Length: 409
Ligand code: AMP
Image (cartoon, rainbow, N blue to C red; front, side):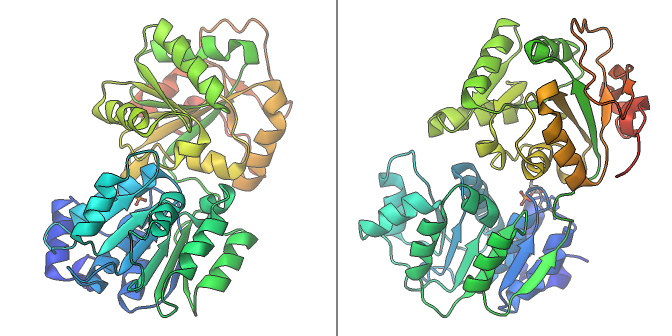
């Protein structure tokens, strides 16, 4: 399929070409014709599948430039809002559409100014949008298209009451699009109450991480996690690395340890101001920061290409978070590795993740590392001791880098 054959108009095609997209991704192929036909759509897709353009492109085609606010995208985090805004700006480069991105943690005035000048599309996080509505500074009475992006995350983050208030402000006659990485019963309930006769699109199984990610478990004592991380990074083969910790406090701690070890790093989490987060992300994108330490709350907003490795310094709380975290690597067809540090007390989470993935992950040792207190938490698998091979890009595609996959569950 080509973008032309999906029914997009020439000015949008020009924008798409300028963005460097040549072939639509599966979700774009599936969603764009239905959205253009005016149907409500439920899309089950992770970040990294091209879902943003899957709704932004047809949405721009369906709304008139200089026609007032006709489309509203509601999304859980500032980072996602900014990214969607960027796609709208780039895709709409030749169409004359104007958009504004509304999110908290920054001053109101620039956002209000854009609203006053007139916009066709609003991309917003729920809290700030309601604030602006309560000040009487936005008119949502002409909205024809509503997009609920990352609906599962909005539910997890407790935004649903706000989202409902926002929906109540919109005309009842409208087109609705809902995207979610997972389709829990709660998400389905929301879809059922908000959408009409929706087309369901699913381009990848709910909890399957994208292929091309080499996944490995590194059993390590809690006390040695920091040491192992520094050791791995000293190897120099991990060039753009995203490290996940369980808490903000631990993210800051890991950041300090890396600083001390002379490894360029930054931390990004919910307690950082918007400008601190943006600076950290910019440095990471530019490559001046090699390691970004993050918590789950900001994981979805991190859309950086060429992340070579995701390291779960702490195991995530759920299989869903695991898939989201490791999905930050191997973007847009590239290859990547995901390493999970596993302390003995995290074994039950690993089992839960493996059940959801339907596979047993390979355990590896970092060659030459002094594991003072060995942790081999699972009797049901062997540990590959030649893990270094995994990091040379030439063999990344070889699952396990010489390690054995123990079997499938
Ligand atoms: P998303 O899932 O919307 O976060 O998109 C993931 C990444 O894929 C972003 O970096 C997009 O710029 C990129 N992308 C989206 N659609 C395409 C396409 N058709 N061709 C190439 N890259 C794309």
